[in-house]
Structure formats: structure tokens, C-alpha cells
Length: 87
Length: 355
Image (cartoon, rainbow over the protein chains, first blue to last red):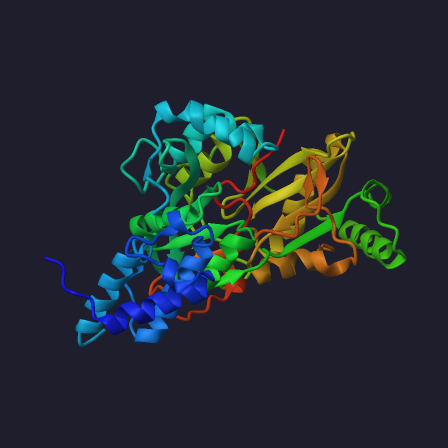
């Protein structure tokens, strides 16, 4: 069962997505992914991941980075890391 | 993600893959030859993946191949320890946005010790974001054998450049030794050549006989020559400058010590004398190796204001070959003293002869 994502986390991730990909926040829906955004290329993706890590003071596992390719997975990964005391 | 799948390449994929190569690597038709592909990605001494080939293909949702990443496993030594690592090759993603990163991610899932060569601007940026230590260009040293031909052929108009070219030829002539060593067709698979006779080496891909035979003897349609004595070896080849009757001697490996260097170089030059060589060069990260070549008359790539061409089919100034080394702990600030590593453009197959 999916754990609900705190609104503050969702809101902040959307802000970072918006700033990194230069896209209006209201265009970012739950299934937002590179398919909906031409600007979401490899470099922007890494920039996005690094910005999220910086914002939430977390570090993703290297193997996670390539799999965080939509809003849902980003939210889930951030929530999980934030819930881990050592994250 | 945009890419619908990443999978290991199978022989049944090759016709379509080679069609893509015709666009992606149109100046390198050899990439489309299966014997070459088999040699590099199927028959290498240290396979890393469980697929038919150590080669990943990226298919878009429509099923078309629109990206790839090949890799070649090897054994390397670092600070006395031996480990398995892998070089990336042919990392390419065609308009697939996140596809390049997804391919790299799959490679990184497979191997912890990663070596990347010949990165373009985008892939260099990716390595920087991942904090992977990177050397923008493998150092190169060259010496003119026929300075006037070099000056005319490659358009060196500047007087200082012309002087540097002539001085290299003069200095090289002054250090000509008595030829030593012998040419061999293969080496014993159990042998190993260590590159530390010119100075301490922190890390290097092991030059075992098995590796040397695969890399330089069994490679299809390339003619490398091996010179050796009981302790050391060199590998070189002669490449004809497109549109001319002259050649370039390219040294790919060098483990001879200072006391043997002039003699080994003399043996190489004597061997290729009949093919009208005008220039000899070597690319190597190991600065002590470069210093030895300088002592024999070679000049660094920075010696002329107009760079000495480094590609000759056709003649081109590439700007050099980027190399990056990504060893654990990943994603942390690390430094690599590239000048203490022995990496040449013979490592894996970056020295690939074009038609």
C-alpha cells in the first residue's frame, strides 16, 4: 500500500521540477515524466536529483537515480529517505 | 521514463543496430562489421554482463533502437590490488532525452569500477554532476621524422611552430640508439608487462599476455606490431595519412625503461622506415612516460600554437580524448592523480582505425 506523501514534500518537489525544467507548476501532474517534458533530458534529470537531495538533505542511492523518472517515484523516494533517521 | 526498454544486444539485433550506426558513426564504417563487433563485445577476456554481447541497446516505445552503450571488462591494478572494471564505448542516445542517463545507469549497476573514454560535452557534464574525476585530454607527445613534410602537409605557417617541429626531428636524431628487442606475433598468455619501469604507477589496466593478444593481435583488420625484450614491450602501428603517400607511427604501449628507450625507439623506426613515416606520436596519462619521450626529442601537444593533427583519415584536430575514472565511493568528491595512472589510447579500443 502506498504511503500518502506529505503535502509539503509534494509542493517542494513540484517547485524544484518547475525551476529545473522551466515549466509552469500547474502543468506538473502526478504522472509527469520526461514524456511530457522535452526539457527533461539526462543532464536536467541529474540537476533535478541533486537539487532535491540538497533541499531535503538526503542522498539517494546511486542505483536509484536512474529510476526516479516521474513525480510519483520522486515523491516516494524523498518520503522514504526523509522517514529514515540516517538519511 | 521515455525509453521503453534497455536490453542486452543479441545477434538478431545487429542488422538494425548497424543501420543506426550508419547514421551515428558514419565516418567509421568498421563499426558495422560483425567480426569487429564480436571481437570487442563478445570475445573480450573479461565479460561483465550475462547477455550475448556486453552491449546495451535502448529501444523507444515504438520499438526502434535509439541508443546504445557498449562496455569492455578488464582487470586493473590500483595501489597493489587487482580488481575488475569496465570501459564504456559507443555511448549514444538519439533524441531520447533521459535515455543516455538510463543507459549509463544500467552500466553502473553492472560494475563498480568504471572507466570512461572519449566523452563528448554532454557526457562530460554528466560525469561532472556525478562528481566523477575527469581528465579533459590524455596528454600527447609527438616528434617529426620528416619536419618539412609535416610542416607542409599539416599547414604549419607560424615560424615558432616550424621551429618546434624541426627541433623535435633534430633532437630525435641525436638520441637515435642501437636497435634492441625483437618483433613478435603474439605473447605468452600468462605473461604480464608492468608499466612502472619509468616511474611509479598508481593504477593501470593489466597488460597480461591474454589481454595484449586480444587487444592487439586478435582485433580484426588492424595491424599492430609488438616489439619486446625479456622485460618490456611496445605496441605501435603505422597509419597512412589519407590522400598522401606518407604515414604516422602511433605508439600504443610502452613499458621500456630509460636505459632501453632509445634502442627500442630505434627498432620501431627501423621497422617502419620503408613506409615513409613523417611523424611519431604517443598518448599516455603517465607523466613519467611522457617525460622520457620528451628526453628523446618528443614535444608535448602544447608545443605548437596550431595543434598537431591527431587524426589522419582524414586529417583532423580532435582536441584530445577525455578520460574519467569512477571508483568507489561513488558520488563523493574524489580526486584521481591521472599523471600516475598508465592509460593510453590503446586502452580497450579507442585507437580504432578508420577506413
